[in-house]
Length: 313
Image 1 (cartoon, rainbow, N blue to C red):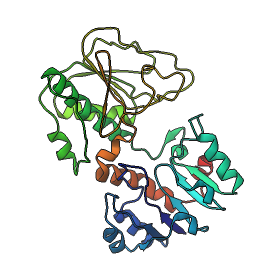
Image 2: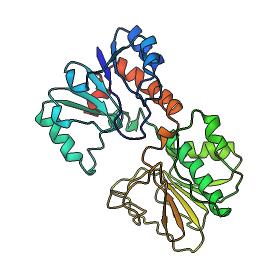
Image 3: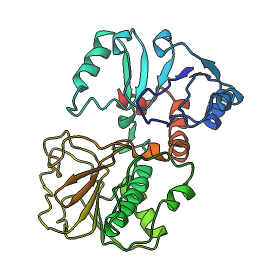
C-alpha cells in the first residue's frame, strides 16, 4: 500500500500520526511511505529518510492512489478528486464547518476515514486523550500557583521536549482538585497529580460537581443527553481546565465562553475564574504524544481495509 503522511498546516501543530520508527516497521511489512517535508514536525525530514521513507514536496492532492494520513484539518478541500484520507475531521457531530467537509468528500468521490471512529466495541483505538489530560493538568497547576502568588497568567507557551521538562514547569502548590470524567484524558491528569503527590477527587459524568474547589479539570465526552451546567457563583479564584473544549456545542457545561484559548494567551478570565481551553494540548508535548499515538495507529494501518476501517467511513 502507498502511504502519504502530509504536513500539518495548523499553527502550533507539531505532532505527527506516524513516527519514523513506525514508518520503518510499515516499510518492512511491504508498504511504501511518502512523507511531505515539514519544518515544524517534531521529527525531522532526515529521520524519516533514515527510516526508509521517500521525502516529497508535492501536496497531497497530487496522489490519488495513496492513503493520505494527517491529524488536523485538511487544506485545499476544493482539490479533492477521488482521494482517500485519514484524519480527525470533526465533521460528524454537527461541528461548525462539518457539513462542508462531508459535502466536499461526497461531491469529489473521495473517501474520508475519521480517526475518531477507528473503534472496537465502541471504544476509540487511537487518541491523544491521555496526553491532553497530562498537559492540561500541569497548566492548571501552574496557573493556580501564579494566581496564589500574584503573578501574571501563564502565557506564550512553547512545546516541551520531554516529560521531564513538563514536570519542571510545576511550582509547589496544594490545591483542591476535582476531575470530571474517567476516560483517557482523566487518566493523564490523574497521573500528573499522583506523580506530584497531590490529592484529587474524580467525579463521573452526571455527578454533582463541587465548584468550591481550586482547580476543576473537565474531561467528559459530551453527548446530547448531558444537560448539566457549571457556572461558578463563588467569589474565590477558580481555575478551570476544559480539556473537552466543547464550546461550540449547545449543551456545553461551561457556557460562559465561546472559543478556544491559545498558546499565546492560554487563560480566559471570567469574573474570578481562569479558564484554560486549548484544543491541541498534546502538541505541547509533541514527541511523546506522537510516539504513543503512532504506536496505536501502526497496526491499524498494517491491517487497512478490515472491519475497523469500515466503521470509520
